[in-house]
Amino acid sequence: QFLFIVQNKEIKQNKVYVYLLEYDNIQGLLTIRHITKDPAFYARRYLSVGNKLVLRVIYVEPERKIIRLSKLGISPEAEMNHKKKYKN
Image (cartoon, rainbow, N blue to C red; front, side, top):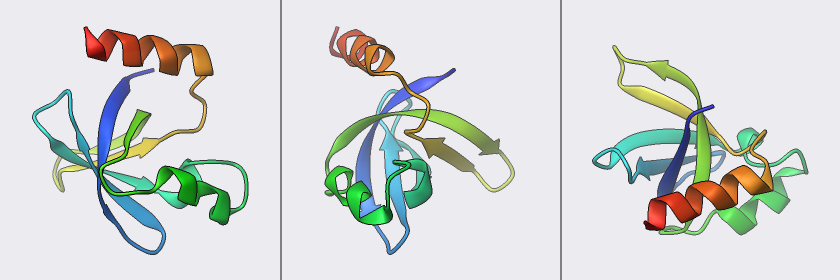
């Protein structure tokens, strides 16, 4: 799976626009349902503007320049390893 460090840019009612920091700040989209399996109000802890997350790509639509991302399915070990890799 392709993992990326992203930074929250703008938070809407049920989606978050993020920048992919490792790829020249390309914009990506994260929907609330792809943050946690818990109810939506638990997802709010990840949703402050400027917050950095490790996400995986689930869908790319080049014509519309849309990259859909998800936090689901990323193991804690993979997240920690990617954060370490990004810092170096």
